Amino acid sequence: MKYTQIQPATKLRPYIRHFGLLESNGRCDQIKTFKIIADANPGLVFQETTCFIGINNEKLPPLYLHGLTSSNSQKTVSDGYCNLIVCFQTNAIKSIFGIDANELTDSYFHLDDVVKNNLTAQLLEERRLNKRITITSDFISQLITKNKHRENLYASYAVANLNINNDDGLHRIQTELNITERSLQRMFKTNIGIPPKLYFRICRFQAALDHIRSRKFTSYTKIAYQHSYADQAHFIRDFKSFTGTTPKLFSQQANEQVLNFPEWLS
Image 1 (tube, rainbow, N blue to C red):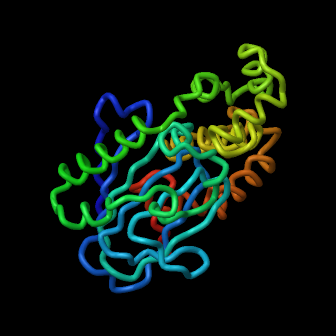
Image 2: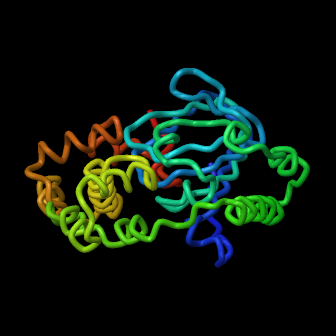
């Protein structure tokens, strides 16, 4: 497996974190499993061949949009693949597609069901990666221009300034924005896709996971306390909820060339 990450044009960086190209090393000689780990970024995926299979044994469409992932899942593949991935910013869905982010949470949709387009045909006709990125960037730019919804500055502030190492982080954001708890809940639901407390948990988990990825730690207990978990058991429960496995097994079996989408080694 080979993964290449490409930065978007400057004007699209408020909406797109990065592009990625995920390619197999030729044909697969056996079924490969990829874990899907909870993270805070929706995305758009183009498959050159529709070979990835979802958790319910359904073949994923050639061009699909997915929302924020709030729990663990997996995909399998048994053939060669070449996927172009667009990783969006956490709160970009509404300002690009004009729909509430919670409508996509933990779901996949054929892009044509969200917005009519001929993007699949355009991408299949063009083999060069830089041209495919240009075509996709132009398509997204056109959607943004046509969309009446603009970036929610309160949501952007919350995403940028949430302190995940302090249990009082959400209350502080609410106070700084001078909004009610109900307004905070509604803002997160429509612009990010999940309640603020769940978003806080996912961000804290991701920070702890980065700690594990670094391999610069002496015990899971220290990781738990450093990231404001009550104890190691609390951390392990959250970790298993968001990955489907334990920190130890993750370290041993995850071939994570793509963050939050590791190939699972048996």
